[in-house]
Image 1 (cartoon, one colour):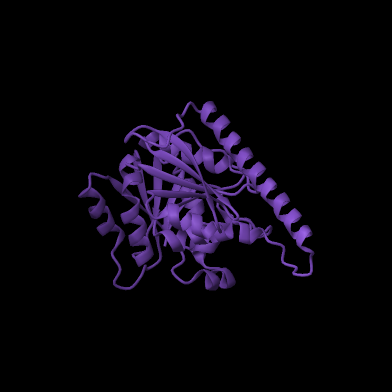
Image 2 (image 1 turned 45 degrees about the vertical axis):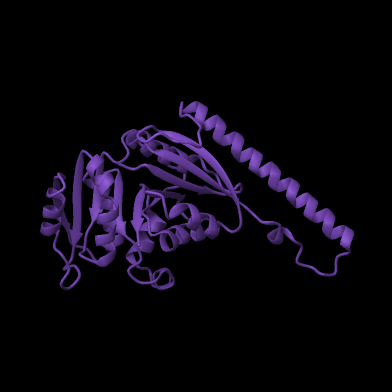
Length: 284
């Protein structure tokens, strides 16, 4: 079972969607939900211009600190009200098997906050990036590349379904990334009522087959069925098939090539990241 879920946030990004999804899984698994707020350090608040007089620089720094304090207070209050609304206790000393929530604040860059908190988490939850607005890409990249943990990407403007994870779809092509995705999401598969393996094409040369994955799951008490598809656009078809089979959570390996190459040439992962209307667990 999941025991620790991390939600990294900044004050300039809406956190309703990620909190809804993270809380749903925390309740199901009796997990502790930690909202990690990234606050810029003093050096990051310094004015870039060296031409400013000393008093002006001090004034700007003081104003920036005041704004940062207000941002922190706003996030704390929002989280407190959210905890009350879902009747989840706020605590820094969680009890195993009991859903709870906590707020932590750290100075520094978002990548450092995610790295510090994410590496000992069972799941990192982030917003779906908006590349058109240049929002969220760094958080997703940091979670994928800096923690080694599964990352739940929540689609923007989509509310959580009541039984999130009851039926999960596993994207399988025998690749290293797919193998890692399976291994690091066993808790989700064990908690699901149904597991469907989505597989298409020939798969990776010498990679394990979907039938062998069924056997792997069977040894862990998980029953899975295979659904095959054939398409020239696996990313889009994975999303369509997940909805078609009735799953409400997709698990897949992410960025078999590097992120920049996939973004430039339109890899399957990038298609899913850009187009998903359902929550997706990504593992690199």
